[in-house]
Image 1: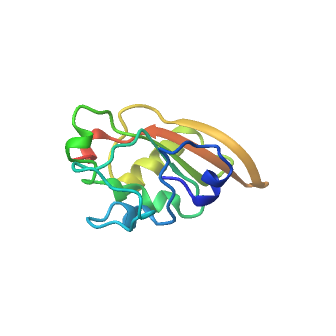
Image 2 (image 1 turned 135 degrees about the vertical axis):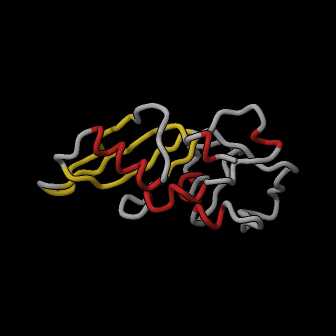
Length: 140
């Protein structure tokens, strides 16, 4: 799900779904429509990646997918890769970041997340992008 600004610059093709809603709204039983031309197929829409780019609050939405990745569109598919931007203490190591993500998910990850430094925010805080596969146990 992409913002309108990301699709305006032609970086994504017509299969991108521009929207400006929170994950909770997007995953609701009757989500807001991005446009009148978009028709959600029966069985739902499956996606491979979710980018959550609100560093101060994105981790609080990690549990929004719990139980929503169901339906025909998800049959036989892997859980999506989640890329969540967040701010962390510069002294927090990879295990600490994994613990943070697992606490927000209220579930264990099946493999170590990839942690990509983005930039320093202050001498004590940095922005990172944490990428991981959403736990399949939470999908259904």
